[in-house]
Image: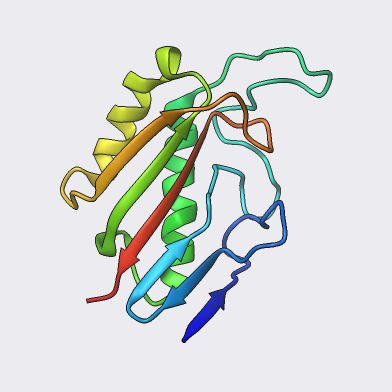
Length: 139
């Protein structure tokens, strides 16, 4: 049996999908970015302004906010970051952002030790630099 998980504690999905889906003792969290749950503001700043011009941004701040959003979804699912077993990470600029991203990611996940894949992509649906998708296992 699978159950959709939706919460107002995390940013609204930008498409027709739930925040997560529980299947048995696994929780599959949809791709999550750093947007603030109530305001849609992007901690660390957006990667471009409203006219599409590039802006400077803080990928570490975006990474921390993204992980906070994932924690909120997991909490709504009856889980926590400690239950994360796999993480897929998307960066729009691997060369510029990987080092700061990796440090911020490690601050939250090093002790937990989920498997991880990090890929570079051209763009994300909102003006953000990082998105994470996780799988958690309820113990």
